[in-house]
Image 1 (cartoon, rainbow, N blue to C red):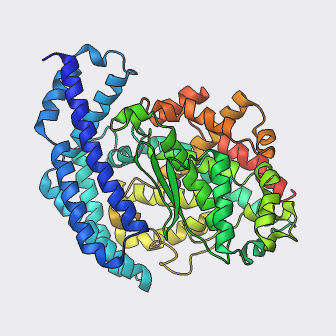
Image 2: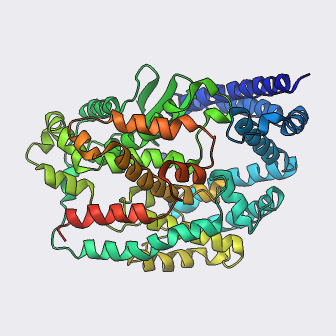
Length: 502
Ligand code: ZN
């Protein structure tokens, strides 16, 4: 058999595995959006069967043999070619899945599923002691997993690599340091400004139907293709691609708070547009997948914050919003823009503003890293959380429920995930700056309701690249420099003091 034939065989195998995955995707979407509660046990059986089949296919020893052959061939000569990209990533996935012994995987699954239940109860009662033994077990297991995966410098690198390929703890520390250094000062300056935003205008009455109509207009303006996607209501918003021509997003509507639907939709739209912009012809292979979680988040943050919270966006959309919502008819544009950009230290990460959000992430990253480096014990985690929180935000969380227990991630064993949120903000800022260099003043376009040029730029420079480059490489190729905190800090300095009139 020729090398080309081997490649085609592996590709066909991978695409069929991806088909099974996309069937699980449909079931998962249905479970979160449509399914009646009593269907849960049956759905769990369906999904368990599929995930078993997928795992079996993905770890078939035949894949290892195919890869051995392909890695010796000319197909990998040019590392940027489609076959080379796919072969490289298939190897990575195969190794990751086969490096862990089945018992370890099963123990991890068992531990995290118990931990999630314990965490729910611990959070409801604000009692860390209920969650503590589970988290101790999780830390021990992820350490073992990191050892099995292997790393160059420290165990945390192996965990991070799962979510942000090629990124290391040292790099993230260096990227976050300027943010940690400058953000608290900026927040303090904004807090002491005499001018204060009136956020109560966002808590007036906003009928659900009007919100949905308005969100659909935003989706259309951004370039969401209704022939290839849907927008539905859920409790926890998300975006998912079920296959070529099928991207689903969800959002939630509160009649007494306008922001969650507006900015939640804009955020998920960013994820969806990325999925829609991936090279469809490579669907089911790494070349047709997103570069990393951080890059994915850069797309959602770009549309949510850089576009959706900009004055220019609202210069175009505010008159339309006023037609939809009588509650805004006596509110001036400037007051509205100020309200949606209010900066206020708060306890809950998912409700945080654009500026303080990164402090929430830096805090979690530092604690995770200390746990993995053995510099912090799970026992001392709540007090370490509170101390650090006070240092960054200026006050202590009133309870562990609003502190160390607020996020689901650790209970699911996802240590190394949090940094991707702030990495997303850093990538977004650097990409946005480059887009303005290439396209000219984006605000001038937004004021006229023109968002397509930005989307086309993103499709061409980022989406169409699939997994050809690591996130680091992609950032450097697109913007001509390695990722840094500079663009994001400059953007904050340009935007927020002006809003606060200082
Ligand atoms: Zn997101």
